[in-house]
Length: 304
Picture 1 (cartoon, helix red, strand yellow):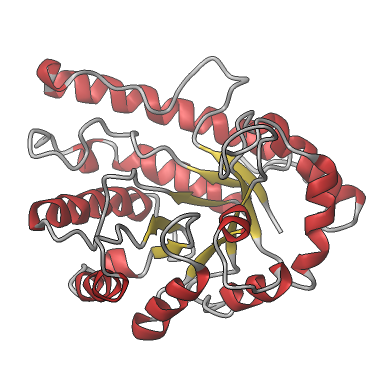
Picture 2 (cartoon, rainbow, N blue to C red):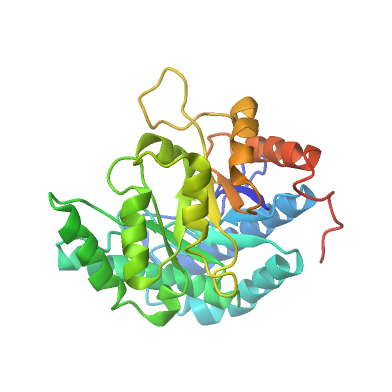
């Protein structure tokens, strides 16, 4: 079981998602920005490994305008060595990484332009994982998409688009149950049609479900992952921020709630992404709890 957090390290003095305005685009700015972002990503990974945080969601913005037609610079060739070195570090330290494309990635949109731009974004993000030479257990996480007034048709459109995706994208793609539109049961329908794994979100399941107990829901989601080419279940963890609208994530780990959740995991060993506002601060507290309970080992020496 590995614990992680998404994209931003609030302790370090760098960001891996620096960008610039589209109107300011130049190849030179791409080179400078990608170099800065990759250097920061390496620092974040080193910080995480030193503290036993072995799951990390990489920012989608490593390459500014990575899927935009304006970016014709051959960044894949220019930064091949840097990406490969980061991938080597990830593998040497038994880390797992993922990416979560932004909300504009909607494969079931009735607008063909949105669909094509979504596919281009998935190709771009997947290509970064390919450049790192990571296997298919490094995933791209998306939602089923919009409802558009017809659940069955929306699911059918997702399935139809999924079947047209490049194989390099399909082997990395997972879908997440959400808190308003598509429940775990909806995601299971998609899985049954095309075999896509389901990334389980406990908080979303609390907000939208069909009465499945948490432990049962976890097992259902875990059963959609092939241990060889998908790896173990990935899941997102959070809880409700007290006094806020339903579905708003907590700002910091509620340790009692996390401890109450863990028995639902049973003998599963999911990799858990904490979608909590204070990022690595909560992740460090969570991994300390798991270490106390014997669910994760003591800190190893980091590999070079």
